[in-house]
Amino acid sequence: MRAVWALGAAVALAAGAWRWGGHVQQGEATAGGPGGASDWNHQAPTSAGNPAASAQRSPLRSAAAVHDRLYRHGSFQGTQPDGDWIVGPDGHLKPDIALRRRFEHYMLGQGEVTLDELRLLVADESRRDRGDAVSAEVLEMWDKYMRLRNYAWKYQVVIADRGTWMPAFDEQKTVRRQILGPQWAEAFYRDEEEYFVDFMARQEGRAEAPRDPGEPVIQAAPGKDAAALFEERKKAYGEGAAVRLAQADAEWADWERRLAGAKRKWAEVQADVGLTPPLRKAEMDRYVEANFKREEFLRVQSLLNLP
Image 1 (cartoon, one colour):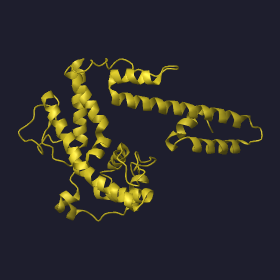
Image 2 (cartoon, one colour):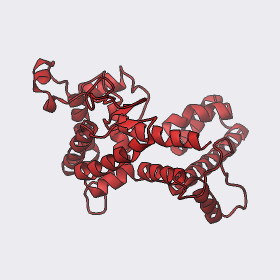
Image 3 (cartoon, one colour):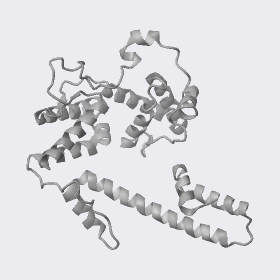
Image 4 (cartoon, helix red, strand yellow):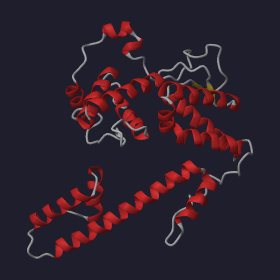
């Protein structure tokens, strides 16, 4: 079982290296090193890093055309952007993982549009949402994030060799802070870094042995003290996982509360003899739109058997 957890830690680091433009190998490192046949850097260089390629490219589409390509005719149809550009009390962009999630959402459009066109879309949508000043800060972070994704890592992760894990992790942690700045690096990567350090500590015997992954997750229960539940999960899974589980509990409780309210509302609407079927439907449509996210509409309709 310890071997399974060790592999999980390595895969976590490897997955991070893949996302961040790192180098991961399943077996022994080759003499070719970075840029060789086993380079997992999936991020193609931007036009700034490849002038020749830029010169051969077609003219950039407008932000409106890029949005239309992705959201009307492409893979973003029916979706809403993940994440956000959060502004602090001082009016400046606030370091938050929500910005990384927003960037990664747009990055899913690679292949349908170019990176430079995605940057235009980021600029346009952040400007519409937050204004010119914050949009400029968003673009500054976008450029830094792209630089991090394209970084030529010195240390490679070899899954079969645990001795390669910490050097790669330490390099990634250092470079993130150099490129993004300490506050943004913490906001973007704190949970992942804590997760990896915790797993490495367990492997070295510096922390309590983890539970069997096959065991059920420690669940909330009626009357169970929230603080005690958090400490129990923290001891079993680490603080980052305990926080995420608490957030999941809160989201589930909120969903159940809203769904119960919708059930009561639907019963009231059905019992109102003064409403025709079209009026009942219109009333419930208004209620659902006011209390649920767009991506939840079909689920609510199915669970309540709404017309």
